[in-house]
Length: 129
Image 1 (cartoon, helix red, strand yellow):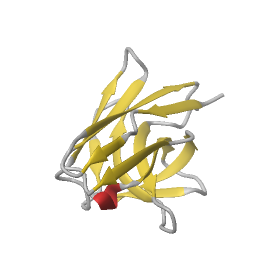
Image 2 (cartoon, rainbow, N blue to C red):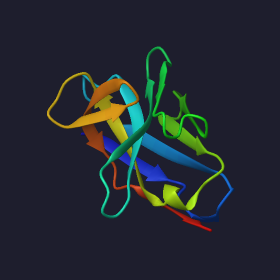
Image 3 (cartoon, rainbow, N blue to C red):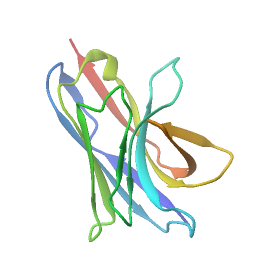
Image 4 (cartoon, rainbow, N blue to C red):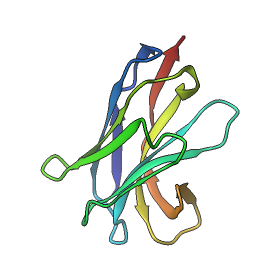
């Protein structure tokens, strides 16, 4: 059974940085990447970044490309999202997700389309101005 647990969300001032963590286990056979998306109240889900667990290839949304870095730690079964220069519009629930090539639930990150296999309960990021 897939388990995805996010942590690291916090209330921060605009301009500060945060590092979100995601610990996962029990990935399905077709999962080949992990990623992050966010959703703010009243807004659609927004893919932010992804990383191929095998090759390390990274994928980024154009909207945050210059402010975020995704990384992985195989030994810890974890991925991370470093977000710099936070803005009030970054306020949202941030989710970590297991990704595969095909499926009904789609997540776009930049020009790449992934299928969502599973995701966690999210971690809340609040940015004050």
